[in-house]
Structures are given as structure tokens and as C-alpha cells.
Length: 211
Image 1 (cartoon, rainbow, N blue to C red):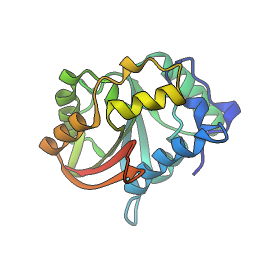
Image 2 (spheres, rainbow, N blue to C red; image 1 turned 135 degrees about the vertical axis):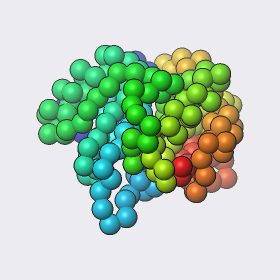
Image 3 (spheres, rainbow, N blue to C red; image 1 turned 60 degrees about the vertical axis):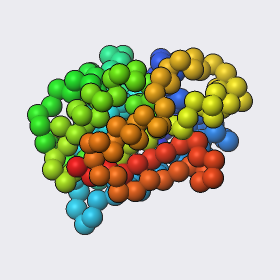
Image 4 (tube, rainbow, N blue to C red; image 1 turned 90 degrees about the vertical axis):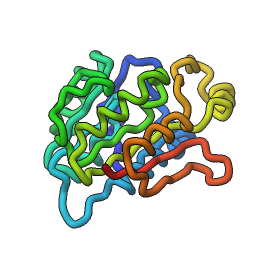
């Protein structure tokens, strides 16, 4: 898959794992998460009309998403991300509409998107926000629309990961675990498929849902 050129992409957010997509060993894990999501997103025979990435971060997935849709949108809660990502998009010749806002109150009409993708954002929500967030994703997704969500597994595995790899990570940022996310998803969508990174001891999940 194609990532933005390293010299073209930048973030000042210390919790964004951007640099790990370009590090010799860690990049395989981080890119694998994106590939798992893209495998679920591949359209049948034609492009999607509209796709949104919720929590786009630095826009590292944008070069692949623009290939499969006529119009790409991005939603990010951190206002600084918009300017940084627009600079990357100009250098990479990528067109997308970026909006600053929260997944718990998405500024879009009902049934607006053909597909929604969200990789490593939901786990940062407070548990009492999860129901509203998933409900909003459902609201903006067209009937029979596709939703692809990626998130890490339970807290103990992530704690071990933080100790071994990401000692700089403030672990409190992972406020919701995969059990809560999956439970909330089953109340709002039909789960069609699930991919796990490391099948017998999964550390990451990607879920394909249909409205």
C-alpha cells in the first residue's frame, strides 16, 4: 500500500503514531492494521460516492482511500490536524474535505456516506461516550452502507505493549476496551466479518459492519 512520503507528512501530536509507520520493524504492525481495514473496504466493481475517515490523524490512510471513492471526507477532533494534513495533501496531490469535530456529534446529514472507516480512534473515548459515537456513525451511514472499525484489544495486552514499545504513551488515553466497542457495535450494526492481528493472542481487531 502507498503511504505519504515521509518528508511530506508531519504531526505535532505526541500521541499520533505517525513515525512508527516509517520505522524499519514497527512499520509492519502499523501498516498491517491499515491493510486489514482496506481489505474490508474494497468496493465491488465501482467506486464509493462518499467515504469518511473518522479520526484521520495525520491522514496516513488518505492515499489509499482516494483511490476507492469519488469524494473523501475526514473528521478529526484535534483542530491542529487540519492544517498539517492539508499541507500533506497538497504535496501528495490528494483531494479531501476535512472537518474539525467529534464522532459523538458528527456535522453531517442522515444516510450521507456509503462507507465509514475509523482506525484506532474509538478506544480514546470515555466509556459513556461509546453509545453516542456508534449511534452517530450509524446515523450518517447510508442504509446497507459499510462501516469498518479498527481498535486494539484489552488493556493488559496494551499495557505490555506500552512497556515494551511505546514508553512515551500516556496509557490513560485508551479509555475504552474492545469488549465495550464490540458490544456497542452489535446493538447498532450487523457484524459481517472480523480480522484479528495474531489470531490466538489478538492485539488488534478490525471489524466489518453493515447498516
